[in-house]
Image 1 (cartoon, rainbow, N blue to C red):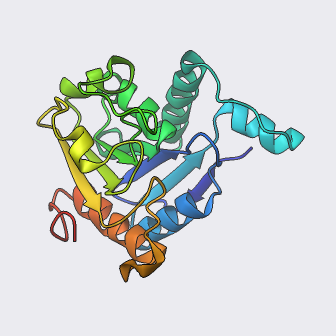
Image 2 (spheres, rainbow, N blue to C red):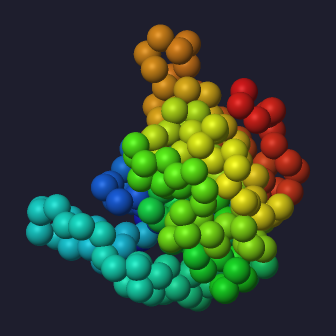
Amino acid sequence: MPDLIDGPPNALHHLVLAHGAGEGPASAFLTHIALGLARGGVRVTRFAFPYMAEMARLGRRRPPDPQRVLLKAWREAIASALAAGAPPSRLAIGGKSLGGRMASLIADEVGAARLVCLGYPFHPPGRAPSGPQPLRTAHLAGLRTPTLICQGTRDPFGRPEEVADDPLSPAVRIVWVPDGDHSLMPHKGSGRTWEDNLDLVVREVLGFLDDSGSSSPPGV
């Protein structure tokens, strides 16, 4: 499965994004985010993990690859972006859910300029821990890479009250997306649309990459 690339080739910022567990790089979610960022002048590369590429080839669902395979795919995607001319000092990484979590495990190691997590899986749905879950969040306490997590306020993988006491590094900032679920979809009666929430995320990420801070107050 070839990478999907959007945005100007000579962009100041290059963001490599990985998909979530159930949908690939061409999902409506990542497509909306990538095209919005591209219109803002960011070069965006979306890649597929091996299991997702195999799903696309065979037309059959498969579980995600083991973590070592996912991390190897991440390192290869970063190397490919750099070989294609992405500026090392401006190369950001991230992704949706699983893709963002895997990126967070290697962000410091690879010297990423920024980390963007779109719906972080703090805990399994319905199993909110009373303390941090080592396999999913322990590394976030010592993370050095400037990190933006865009999380829906209704996300079953981590609502505001469920992650309030998690020990997060000062490098990590969470933007709470109003009434969003794990895919940032709001209730029909909320007065917001899915596109509203995704556009909010695009604005936040653009501001984050430009070091200009949030373009709108958290939770608005």
